[in-house]
Length: 317
Image (tube, rainbow, N blue to C red; front, side, top):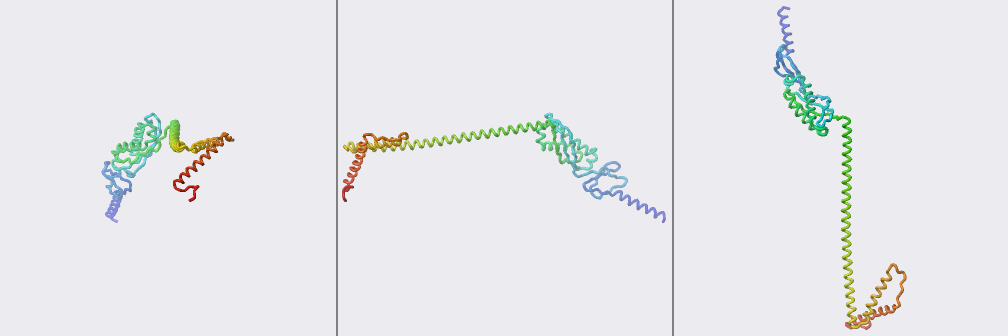
């Protein structure tokens, strides 16, 4: 083999090696920066890329996928001087590989320290009650501050979540007693409100019952007065009739009137609850005479009616 042939073979081998050295395959989700003589020139995207061997070199290999950082537990003093322990997580994604590689040194450490500092700033300006009840507001405030601060680094902070807020043990016990007292207070208020409402409803019911009872008594009194009025009218009419008969000289009318009153008096005496034995008076014959007068008066009235019509109970048709 001649010297020329050996030279050609060596040249081909070197060319193949240079080609392999210049070919770079970037995996999905990654971006590589390229430096030429120590200066950044371009960014290699996922896929097959070509470099100039011995002139260009890979500077930094940047992860373009969303990443998660755990924020370690730290002590925070709140606005009302309560000491709490806080930890959380940060989600961020690199948007510009060149800025993430050359604008900040140790990107993850920078994001972590910036987040911890702003946690103390944001939560230190709030009361303990706000920390425990407004966690979404804390997350939003932290996200706004940290995302604005990291924009020059070519990254986007997508979420910041506070995982745990742990007050001291004695403070937790005090909060438990306060919560129990508040619940007891609410229970007492509800119970008093229930008793008040029950008393109001009871009084309202008694009021309505009294009104209905008064209306019933009024209606009964009205009807009783009306009955007495009608009875008086009937008695007055009967008295007029008897008086008219007496005026005409009818002795039977007088006997009828006296016998009726006498009979009513005997009925009242017999119906009295404290009388068990009824003694007839000596003038009982007068009563019988009055009854006889009633019979005569009725017969006379019927006789007059029969004479007016031409017939009577004692006449034959």
